Image (cartoon, rainbow, N blue to C red):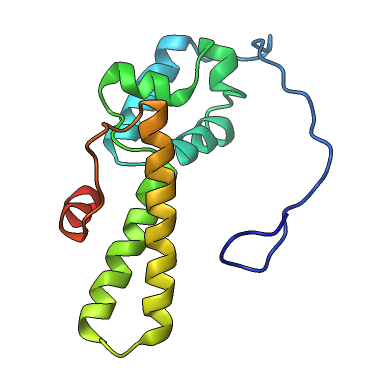
Length: 150
């Protein structure tokens, strides 16, 4: 199926099954992994990059195999989880484009792209409201998005 605002198609291929048990060669303890997760989150590193750092540098094959839960739930327990990463990336894009359009009011091409980003934000926020990740009264506005992104 084609994407909504770009004319690209997804990739269809088989996926490897994932193992959720801890390998015997892992030498780092659960508490050390938790401390690394908290350290990286306080440095404002996004969860996807935290997982890659733990895998590539520290040799942790899977956070889910180590703890039996996902990285975002660990960040919620520590009080370091703010917004979903995909929504935050869209908000950053929208803030940059909004600042650009304030300077260049006749940039019609980017006005259209800004509307596409806003529709993506509204769709994804509707999903997160339904799932209970965002509060039901959460609404996008450029002023609050600037504060959330900083």
